[in-house]
Image 1 (cartoon, rainbow, N blue to C red):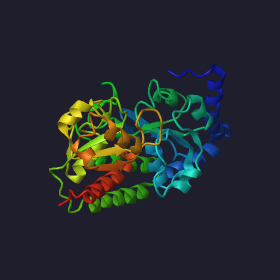
Image 2 (image 1 turned 60 degrees about the vertical axis):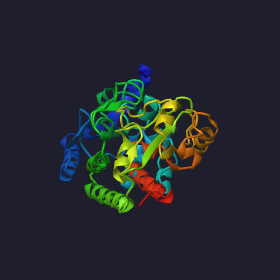
Image 3 (image 1 turned 60 degrees about the horizontal axis):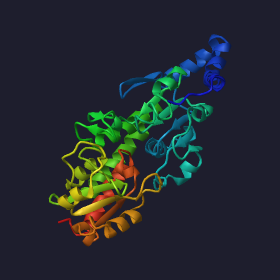
Image 4 (image 1 turned 90 degrees about the vertical axis):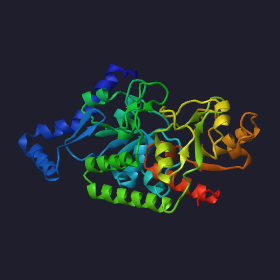
Length: 349
């Protein structure tokens, strides 16, 4: 667990408490006016989130988003002016959000320190993964909440019976649906008091899925999703974001018989399944082997265990960003790209 030096912890806590002290120091006048203004906009309000009750006294003005997935939702809601920092990026920012993203400080490309986040004086901290706001991550939710900072974690990482303690990237007892992603958008829109923006964004995403899958008939086509690692590849199980993509397009997942989110499966087993199409994570990070799609293809076409796969011989590849393979707003982009790829490869009837 990250432990902050005591004097810096006190400094961070003092910074966080400063606005409250300023409001209360002048007696009832200033504080009362602020409370009346917040009440007029429907605050305080509470969100039920992954076993936590998230209380927001006012609309956040200095939020920090610790994962790219939640950051891209907030940017898509037009909230860049209310972000004090972002962190943990695996891909270039989503198309259309570049200008908004450049206006937000990046605290770190990976997990920032607890102290770094506190120095941004956040009034809300969001994350895409339970592990980011847990032991071994940036800090626990309880550590932030003790300092008066509410936290929010993407419900996709605790929904659908997600067990994050089962090892690796966890497992699910039920398939994750796109509805959970839409629910996160509505949660964050409500947290910031921009519910209408959230409704409009969800409506646009649903229409994109409808258009992408309209008339697509690929029920007999088997897909395999490879995220990273050449020697012990992380391949998608039944029930995470790739499963949601596969169900949306109406295809089959080669490893739908495992409920682990990203099990490591040997290439001999892959050869036995011989998927029709391989969906490749095209990552820009460098923490595993075979991160980019180019590196994955080179490995598949040279390795004796994989070069005879039907999909490899026929070069049946579809490329996705890493974010599209995680439950996020980019999962809709994943539906579009897989649907287009299947059409391009001649599988759509």
